[in-house]
Length: 343
Image 1 (cartoon, one colour):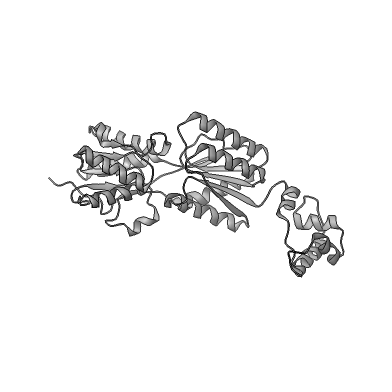
Image 2 (cartoon, one colour; image 1 turned 90 degrees about the horizontal axis):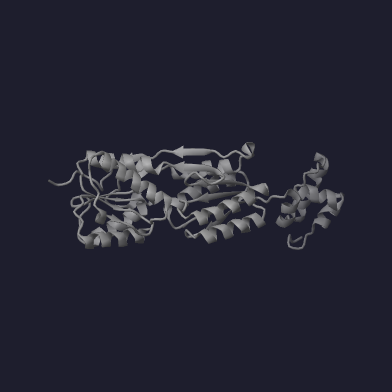
């Protein structure tokens, strides 16, 4: 019999039980059914090819098997790597991950959250830097709290501050340590592709790098800080602007790896050799760097593990009402794209 035409009533008749009993077994009601009857219903459903109604299951359990995953841009290897860790864990739990891409729109983020709440998602994981805009954050907090009041849980991979469990990379410390290594190589004149001005991650990395320069008595000229999109094209265009300004830097730091990739493309087009004429460094250690030549000096974050940890916390119901923060340290990787400056 085709599963498209099999009803729950037919399953109940085949198993010799009431429709209510069959519903409790298939849809996961909190009311208990004996193991003998449960086995009969499941065997009948399998034999008849019955496909459970997801909406009915959600109503019976007041929760679905869905886990929402919100990222800024799935095309960015930073987000796809974290998403891989999240989906690996949710699949192990027999859950379905629903992906939403926000493109850094606070309004779209809140809209997707509301939709997941309407579908009674079991949990939501938010991945991505928070905006410095307070109004956007206030709206997001309201949506998170409404979802939690409904019984769902939320975890974030971002800065602490939201009412949720958080996996937080230490952007400031990682950028500070990277700058110290580059200073130790002999660099004294730096330029920074600083990303968007309203993105907390970009600001933390800029501030961390700048603090190490200040501690070493080095000044960062204003024209050597260029803001742009947090993307490959943003790095490309920011580097073109930097070159037009006539920077005298010996080392260029991009606040994420995709921007660094764009920067190296712009430098190659301009005939500037990396690292012979200009060293380049990034941040994140995204997987696509393995194909980049020369290999990129960067700060490695354990992206997949960060995602897996966030998913674990989102599905951990033993800490209801408790918001935990896990800080993640980066690892400095000095590769071929940086070398001591020519005298």
